[in-house]
Image 1 (cartoon, rainbow, N blue to C red):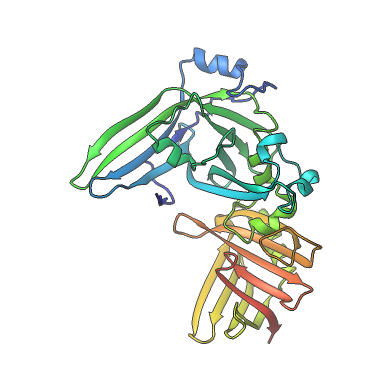
Image 2 (cartoon, rainbow, N blue to C red):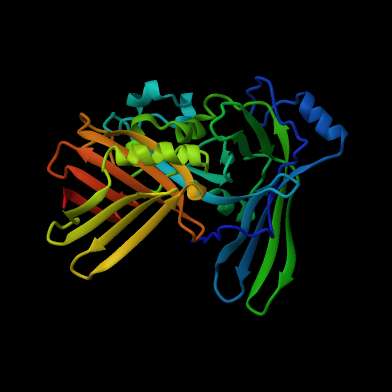
Length: 371
């Protein structure tokens, strides 16, 4: 089942009340322990709840998400998207958690390495990020919205954990969505039924290091940032403001500077043109396929900035293997369609030399020679 996600719709939402507090102690149980903030929340009779609005077709066996978002109970609403990444490794991120210094343990050449999939939900605005994930690995992984659509889903057995933090800050607050679960028919058309799915959530103490493995990886993938920027993973979140954008733009231009370039595409038989321009408040990237005279022009600005990573480039762009062959900088931006795109500038010591990639292998111009 494939699910589409609009950028923002306010029909359904996670609700995170501004008065929540949500901090916790050091409990390490599956659903979290109660602390003073939780007690105050319950005494006040307030509830935190997750909502997902869906449409189920009457004509074919399919469903799609109408809205998926988080609200703080006031005017602020964070749009959400289902995301996922994978590693082929012997150890799971759920075993002992993740730290950059232990990255070598997750090499795919280790004996016994197998495929590990890590689905999660990413919700954010310019300053706040909420990540939602399940606290254990399973043989068959569902992305969060698919799991909530499952008629057999029991939140008490598999709660969705939420991590809420200000982007760029270390302190985080946590919730466990393991309470009342409801699926309510809200309207009906000739072709579809529309439901609101909700589950109550409560403040909880910090998860264990093992449970935090996937979100710690998202925040700081270390050498795997090279893979994350090539494949459709989330890059570590940065604020959508001018200061962050200026830092990101200069890092990109440090690999491939401003100017006009000629280059080659994937087959080397097709040529391409590239123009990089730094304007007031923007970075403009224009990619032209010479054989068809088609040009894709991106005007990248601070308000659309989502994530950023930089680091080493490896000979194989989808594996952390061997010695680094160069450096890269990559930034994730909203694409205006409810999703995102990643622009990656790199300089390496191989024949490809300078490369600009848009969404990994989707569009790129390599072997760049400045006009």
